[in-house]
Every structure is written in C-alpha cells, then in structure tokens.
Amino acid sequence: QVPLKPGRSLMDWIRLTKSGKDLTGLKGRLMEVTEDELAKHNKKEDCWICIRGFVYNVTPYMEYHPGGEDELMKAAGTDGTDLFDQVHRWVNYESMLKECLVGRMAVKPTAAPKGEDFKKEIISIISLSCFHITSFSKTGEGLQLFSSVISAQFFCQICLASVSYDWFQTDSLIVIVIYTKQKDMIAELVIVDCEDKRLRGEIIVGDHSYLIEVDLDHAVQEDLAVNVAEKVGKVEIILKKKDNIHWKMLGQPSERHNTFIKCTDRGLFYRKCKLVSKTEVTHDTKLFCLMLPKSTHLRIPTGQHVYLKQIIAGTEVVKPYTPVLPFLPLDFKEPSCSADGHIYLMIKIYSCGLFTEALDHLQIGDYIYVSNPEGNFKTSQVQTLEDLFLLAAGTGFTPMVKLLNSALSTVSHLRTVKLIFFNKTEDDILWRNQLEQLALKDERFEVQFILSQPTEDWVGKQGKISSSLLSEFVKRSRKDSNVLICICGPTPFTEQGVQYLKDLGYSQEEIHAFTA
Ligand code: FAD
Ligand code: NAD
Image (tube, rainbow, N blue to C red; front, side):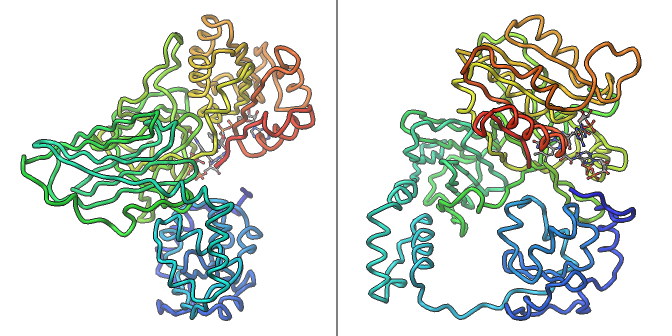
C-alpha cells in the first residue's frame, strides 16, 4: 500500500464513477480490442489493462490505486489477469471499474497447439475431467506428446481428477455422495450452500476444488447435513425433501458442475449472513457475530480469512477479515467446538474507514455477504511443534486467536506458546484480561505486551518491533526445538519482523507471515 493524495480514497473513486463523467473516453461505446490496440495504451496518461478478457481504461483510476501507480503500470497495455490474481484476486474489479470498461478482447483464431502449449492444454483438459483429446491430437507431434504427458509426471493430476459423485434417495432424503479418495478429508474442507433450490457443494482436495452445482429438481428443507468418512475420503451431503415424492433426476447441472480445478481459478462464493450481535472489545474495536444460513455448511480453518462484501454507494466493496472465537477458552481438555453456525469477527472501526464505518452502521438483523475461506496457513505446520511464537500488532491478533487455541488443545509436545503483542496504547490491547487469565491458568502460555505510544505510567515494555526485542523474547525452549513463529500486523511491521527473524537465523519454514 502507498499513501494516496487527499481526495483519492476509495470513496472518492466511487463518487467519481457515479458522477456521470466519461471515464473511458469512448462516450459509453464498447469496442472489441485487439492485442495490438491494447499494447498501444501502455502509458500513465493512457493506460488500458485486460483482466479475464475484459479491457479497462485505468488511466483515471491511477491516483486512486491503493497499491500505487507503478504497480498498476506493470500491467499497462497487457493482460494483467495473472498479476491481478497474485496480488488481490478478491477485489471486485468488475464493480469498481465498471465505468472504465472499454470492451472485450477480440477472439484470436486458434492454431493447433504445439509443444509446451499443447502440454498445458492437455493438463487443463485432464484436470477438468474432459477427455476431448482427439480434437487436439491432429498432429503426430501432439499424439506423441500426449502419451508422454499421460505416462510420466502428470499422472498425479489424473488421480486427483478422479473425484466423482453419485446420488440416491429415500422417501424423505436426497443423499449426494462424493468420493474424493483423499485420506485426511475433514468437514472443514467441505462447503455446502443451498438457496432457492440451487445446491452448491465445494470440496477442497489439496490445492484443487471439486464442485457440485445443480438446480435441484424439487424443493428441499432448509437444514442440510454433511457427513465425512475421514479415512476413505467419502463426503455425504444429506438434503431433506420438502415433499415425499420420487425425484427423477438430481437437477439441472450448471456449467461449473462436476469440475475439478485449482482453487485459485474458482471464483469466490458469497452467502448472506445475518448480524446477530455486536459487542465492544475496546474503544474502537468490536466483536461482530454473524449467523450463517441454516442451509450452509461452512467451517473456517485456523489461519484462514474470509471476505466481507457490502454495497457502498452502489459499488460492491470487499475486504478480508479473520474469524476469531467468541472468547479465549481457558480449558484445553478437548478441542472447543466452533461449528455452531456462527462466525465471530473482531474488527477495528477506523474513522473515515470506508468499509468499517459502513459495517459499524449495520443494525442487528441486517445482512452482509461472507465468502468462502482462503489463506495459505497449513494446520499441519503446528502438529509437531514444541515452541510457538506469535508476533501480533493491533488487529493482527485475530489469526492468533484460533491458532493459540488449536495449539494448546491439540499439540501434544507443545512446551511454550508465547504471544508478543504490539499495540499503541494500553487501551488498544485486545482481550487483555482474557490473555492474562490464560497465562495464569496454563503454564505453557505467556504474553508480553509492547506499547509504541504508552502513557507515562506504563511500566511494561515499550517500542516497536526490532531485532533486539525479538532476540530477547523469541528463544527456543531447547537447542534445535521444533519452532514456528507466526507474524501478523500492518505490512511494514510484518515485513520488518520477517527480516529480523531471518537475520536472527530462523529459517523460512520456521516463519509464517499472515498476509492477504
Ligand atoms: P480504508 O477506507 O481502507 O482506510 C481508512 C483509513 O483507515 C486509512 O487511511 C488508514 O488510516 C486506516 N487504515 C485502513 N486500513 C488500514 C490497514 N490495513 N492498516 C492500517 N491502517 C489502516 N481488520 C480487522 O479489524 N480485523 C480483522 O480480522 C482483519 N483481518 C484481515 C485479514 C487480512 C488477510 C487482511 C489483509 C486484512 C485484515 N484486516 C482486518 C484489515 C481489513 O481488511 C481492512 O483493511 C480494514 O478493516 C480497514 O478497512 P476500511 O475500508 O474501513 O479502511
Ligand atoms: P495499529 O496502527 O494500532 O498499530 C499496532 C502496532 O503495530 C503499533 O503499536 C506498532 O507497534 C506496530 N506498527 C504499526 N505501524 C508500524 C510500522 N509502520 N512499522 C512497524 N511497526 C508498526 O494497528 P492496526 O490499526 O490494528 O492495524 C492492524 C493491521 O493488521 C492492519 O494493517 C490489518 O490490515 C492487518 N491485519 C492483517 C491480517 C492478515 O491476515 N494479513 C489480519 C488482521 C489484521
């Protein structure tokens, strides 16, 4: 993120897009854009970018881009889809840039694919379980390549793609059975939504996503159930028929139905959740409790975040937030159950914050859109740990909540969990009481508060993240102990922290930085 000039916030951008000004310079006309035409618009004062086949004139957006003009210019005059996906695929550019739409990319006539392109094509065909290979194998070279692709390194892709489903019915139930063949399948990897007869079931298998999406033949009741046979990787989605009639078919499949693709290629899915409570945590931070629809099965894995979506001044705005628990459990005899159909979010309300101010105005009973979870933290990173260090700044505390709980309740060899919590003032410390209680109750847990703007009467540590602070507080409990250091906060905090830790000799594998 770069500092934006006054008058260049997201709200200012939304206002400009609503002003009726011609932002494309085409007076509302849409055109078909060739690659040559796109390439001509590669300057700051005339910049077009293609995202997923649509071309936008982003020249007027330059000064409003939170990542800065230089970042945007990296894609000037080209297809910026990959770059966009790497940095913020969750940003709803269609809505944000709709007034900048120039048109679609012109479709290029396709030549028979060769060499590397051919390999890529085959892999995508395999991973989509579509075996229309013959149409691509007209050349001898193609056929030869195909057999080597199948036989060697891409065999695993075929195995993964062999996720399949079946369904059956009783008088009162519809049961959809998905065979993932994934041995460690768990309920967190299954996300099911059913609204207005449209059933959507997404199963995460490694870094791939398998999707069932059909418009059901008949109506079903609101509550659905999901069963997972963990050892064999079998998932059952159980729907209750509204009327006890015989179904001739499951329903009409959508074009995405029965596809198996990379998670990053699957668009984010949102469902509407009801705000059921809003409680103060500190002077500027609140705990929001959202209730999932009865017809949704969704559990957010430790270390992952969701996206909230609101329509602000007619534009869809999306921001990431990390679910927490309703409170810090103090007893770790058994893992606490967080699958009660509610999502808890600890959110700091910024004065003039576009999204958080709108969020703060939501009334109990209002609805907000919540996405499927995302994030690259792997719970397996924790299972064999002996020492866990959590470096959190401000609301960067949020991913630490579930992590702390999961480590203390499930990791058998865990010796120490140390939270080093950076805040501006004492009043900003989130859940201070609960953290101190936990430290008293569980001898494995220790918390250290460090303030950057303390009042005179603060007797604790002060300062910002530094090499000396980290060398004082981050120490293995024994030589060569298995350690993980997690870090989350404002971007400069996280970046500096990671660098200091590396300088102190911690390896890449021993550090996890939470980012978008
Ligand atoms: P904006 O309108 O974007 O900004 C208004 C002003 O607020 C800015 O000028 C600045 O002074 C201040 N501000 C805004 N954003 C930030 C920021 N990120 N850092 C420092 N100052 C800022 N926030 C939570 O409160 N709880 C969470 O659980 C949480 N989880 C997140 C998870 C991820 C993966 C990421 C990337 C961010 C998370 N955030 C979280 C931050 C959140 O996504 C928003 O950035 C934040 O709520 C501000 O949004 P806004 O639209 O209100 O502010
Ligand atoms: P804040 O402004 O209240 O600052 C808290 C502490 O962070 C400060 O006391 C200081 O010690 C440190 N800090 C702040 N700016 C710093 C800088 N430039 N260099 C070094 N240290 C600095 O924090 P906040 O308003 O609560 O912001 C929390 C941040 O955490 C936000 O940027 C948010 O986006 C981020 N966050 C990220 C995730 C994620 O998963 N990536 C999750 C939650 C929050």
